[in-house]
Length: 263
Image (cartoon, rainbow, N blue to C red; front, side):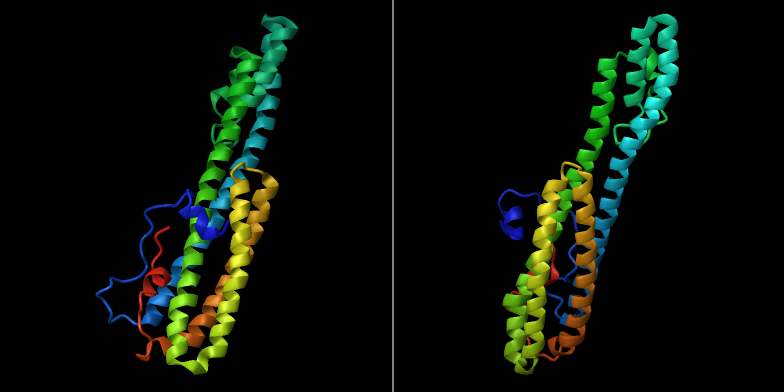
């Protein structure tokens, strides 16, 4: 399924992002200025995605570390307490409970009383279920939100490029046929970026399960995407900004998808 279809056909679309385009009645603002503003917003969005991914990876890794730390504490406190009061069985139960209680619901290492003393009061069954579920659920929830924002970003960037290909570039080529070669290069870039966006969208859907390998691969794709976007944006602004502002390019409705991002 195409990236744009993921949002159109039941996908998650984030709300509340500001529009980077100026109002329709404010036509005094140069197209080149609006294009540069749109590029700044897209750069900021991919940077926020990368930061959010880093937090999800840290939370997921912290859940594992917290579990190990809790196991060490629980084995000591819960085990000794159990051995003194409930015998070997009580000690084992305390050790297991303390081990998993070291995770906080967000998947990060815990230093709460549950992480230290859980072994003395909880059963092994409740500890394993409550502690591990809290750690995993926090990681999955964070990855799920990240996936939704990735899909929304992919849809926004795809719509931006489609608006350029079918609208802005078409009008620019009509007004400035001498720019045909540069326009062809920009359209070619869009195809390459679209391939990366498809991979990002596929990985984002898989990353909703907080799989470490998938998250790491997604991070690499986002880094590559950011680098290519930067090169593409710089070339585009150098190649066509002056031509956009010389009065020969008509806005036939293409400015909305090119300059405005609703997702």
